Image 1 (cartoon, rainbow, N blue to C red):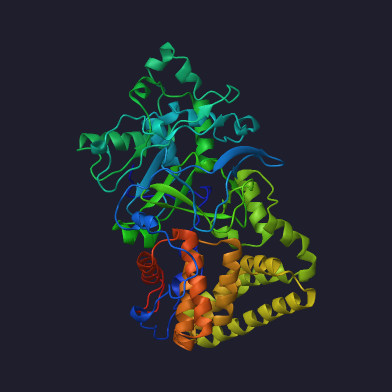
Image 2 (image 1 turned 135 degrees about the vertical axis):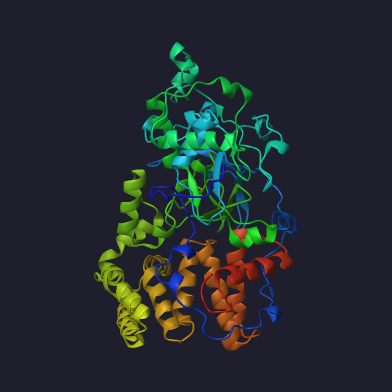
Length: 537
């Protein structure tokens, strides 16, 4: 399904894009100095990571991403309930999962569609007959039992739809195979579906957004159908006989979507450019992906390309280790109190990941600077900077910069005084990213170029808590370009920056060939960091 407008819903799950949501960077100049001649730069020089040319196929054209769900299994985890663990070792860049959606709603605009449209699509296409809706988490304890396994790939695309019936704008992967149920302890997929009644002949009228969407679709069909629209989902001819679920079941379906869907403003920009595709705003349900649990410092990164959900390891994952993702998106870079509050409100659990545990354990050592700095940026310095820049008052911008630098000096003084472990230090810096983001903006507005020290600190922090994210690769490109510009391509510092650049891109895109890696780096530079007018793309 494709929509032309969207009404973003605050509770949508697991948007992982950072770069387009910064409060300051989206409005300011980042690169006022002349950029190096990128045509002469080889980001892969002296690369120490092996390449896999077979990985190139994902980025050489609009090919369908194949389903790959192996090396992981569903397990019950102490204190967490159901989750997924590795059954073999994974190296950084390895595909942990690539899986098609059960339902996908896209938009030609770079905006995430509303989660309500996912529910609407499930009801309109009668996808609620899928067994996935009997095993996915719906907010109740009985819905998170490990009473099923993954279906065989041969069961995929049970819809009977042909490639000709698929949307013409991009190849569409087959839907995920139905889960293999091991018991009947889960709630029924649909009581109305299993027990047709006379009332089912006259399906209950839709209300609210369901009615409006159904009316719009009927109008569109009368006017010529869904030309240009896309819809992805699995089903079967038997689904046509399913009655519409009752109100209670529709509410449960809406909860499943709330807790399990994923949406973002666009598919990966660099990968889409390599594939010759236009990145789409999207939201959907990838049921196999939805089984992964949260961590504020996850060991994988995930994003959508070509409609498929891709999950890659960002560091070594050993057999028996839990595989985790982040549910938070941009709030992943907030102090632990704010992250835990968001997770509690949206998903109903208290996070006890290694990062939250470490930040809580060392909170007293930070002498309240941890929260005071964040509150100063959020409540005073950030708004003051925006107002000063809007008025063109560079003296006021300099005052904001000076006060911010004072806060950061206090923070680093505490780091030295308390001898915080390196990993804990990176966690704290990541939680203070808004402060560093403001520092970048102040330096850019004042024509000072990159703040290299803060840039390097943030790059290390992102590698620790959000490796492979788009922000990680953007920071890696910016730092590499600064090193080349200031120290030359052959310097020792540039070689270290080249290694960081490659690690970030391998974590996100896999161990591709040098040629494809160079294209991805160039695309990220061009699409996220403008070198023509000095503004963020």
